[in-house]
Image (cartoon, rainbow, N blue to C red):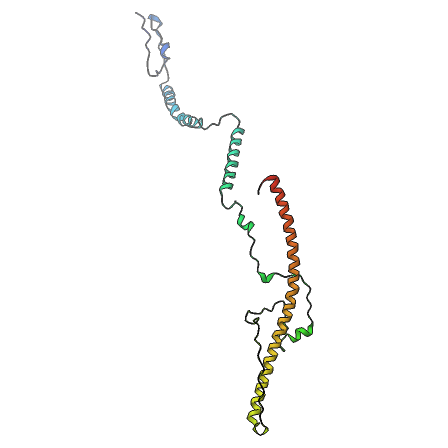
Length: 242
């Protein structure tokens, strides 16, 4: 008998490998027995093993692109910090809230003139204050009392009326009642006029002292202002205008 040529198989066999098929020649024929159940288990395990490992391979393939490079990171940190500082400085210059308000610096806040206290020594005579105060009311204070323009107007000179002689037989009760009433009104008018004159006089005395103190303060401030102007002029002459 001629020897059989070795044949190749595309699917797995149950015996020897494909390239190791036995040659049956004459008396050398040998029949080999093999366990069919064990071979089926092996083939089943070979077929199921790639399916179980596929998810692990996919996970490995997915994780590979996320791997970080092995170069140092300090260059990126420097770039980010420089960008951050640049953006912060740019935002600070562009934001209107961070810009200085020159108007608030140049223009001072308004001051109530009534709240200004001039340091002067003014001690009026208590008798003069008593003559300038209404009996039974608060004591007159020349520092706070103010007069309107109507009150400060000059009063016209009133000529005294000529006396009219009345005979004694015509001076009845009606005449005396009218005369008493006129005398009370005249006295009240004189007292009110004198009271206001006294108040204006004491107020004027206080304002005179306050004016003198303010004039001295203005003179000192003008000296200080002139000194500051000289300093600014020297600075501008050396470094240019402000």
